[in-house]
Length: 250
Image 1 (tube, one colour):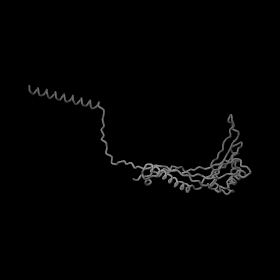
Image 2 (image 1 turned 45 degrees about the vertical axis):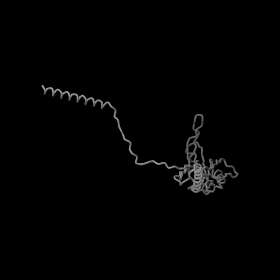
Image 3 (image 1 turned 180 degrees about the vertical axis):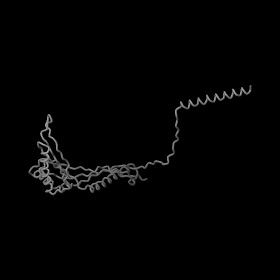
Image 4 (image 1 turned 90 degrees about the horizontal axis):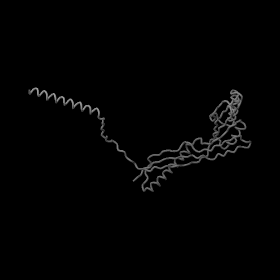
């Protein structure tokens, strides 16, 4: 009798344990997963360096020493081949005149060439074919640009022409303007430091904010008259902007 009772107790305990295990398994499946992460200690410490950030601007004016001439010819004929042949003759004459004026081969560049139908409204019917060619010429004697334009139109047969001025080498002008811009930035920074009651320190960073271009006058010359064309050269403005960061001492 005692042995039978012990067997029953043990069986009941095993049954209870199995039920408890099943219950825990169900709970484990139904509960959402939780991920605990402890914060990691940072091996580096960010620091803030106080400073004065300012900008500077400068303009240097220089007389241009290079004229860039855009010059073109065009032709209109009943067929594309005829228009192209006529254009070749006109372009050859223009190039020959350009070289006769002293423009070197390396300073003559084709910037555009086009052959296509000429449409007439309102039905956009083809009335013939047009061809055009545009050249870029570099002229280094800017003081004689007016006579050169006249020669290209009156003797070279150019029907489209315009001119702009630039500097053959603008590095020196930009370097000069950059020095003045940095000096302007330092002057502004010193005024800001004085107003804040601090002492201006060394330069920490300099950034050039200016573009590589500069303002350039341009002229459009059409149908130049027999009188010499007047094209004032004027001056170019080389613009430089910088940003400078200065440290604060004391």
